[in-house]
Image (cartoon, rainbow, N blue to C red):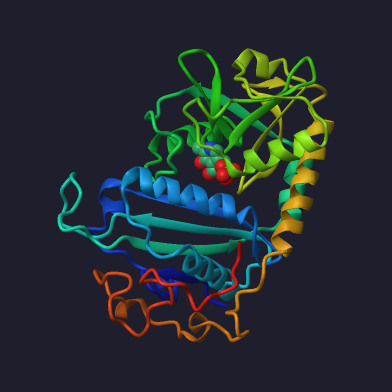
Length: 342
Ligand SMILES: Cc1ncc(COP(=O)(O)O)c(C=O)c1O
């Protein structure tokens, strides 16, 4: 079965999906992204990711490409067309296609949007979590707006590559105060000597992880002591336990920091328990999301769309321009009053 991507209003074969050479994402990293975990074909922590997407777009003054309802249809449809049961769905929005110039295009370009979905081998992910992973630390060298989920990821790319070359799974950035901010693509946590869960607070220059937020709520519900306070690399090396969180990793135990072995070198009990708590709750909440149907129970127009060869793609057409093949909701109207993924 070929993989399918959503690209500016069409579902196309993934292998043939192309963006314009003057897409501002391609030339200037002028765009944002979001990633949702998928459980049983439904989006996990859906609302939190939608809210962060809206915030990232607003902070960069990029227009919403379509209503949240329509976005939910597109995401759900991309998941369905790729037959993803457990996996990830990726969405990227850029400031659109325009002649290269650092300042915003004037008149504004229509935002460009891409969605892809992929399966995750849950058994392999569980085996990895059961062993735990290593992290290294690297100097923080990112811009001051890491709260925006920008596609400009070069420091993260270099940090993750450094981790890979060191045989580690993740790199933790350490800021000028000597405190760990977060990972290249995850939030960083320890269980300190006093048994408290520690993770950097969101006033620091970090991405406000959606998994982090859900896990904080679950930890508090479970009566665990949570302390949103930074920790040093030394504290991490001496910690009882450590782990990382993110839509891609969920809750992943860390067993080595800069080569120092934590505890007995195996995932700690709290990290294992929190992973299970998070997965159970995310699966339960995702399962409560309604199927992707409109109120009459009809299939949406999206589901009747044929996959077009990528060569037929409109490259500069505004989402919502008069085009019969566009998705409902792209002109900002409700998508057929759809009952959608939360
Ligand atoms: C830099 C960074 N921090 C934290 C996270 C975790 O965020 P979330 O839990 O919302 O996936 C990510 C996820 O990609 C990330 O890139």
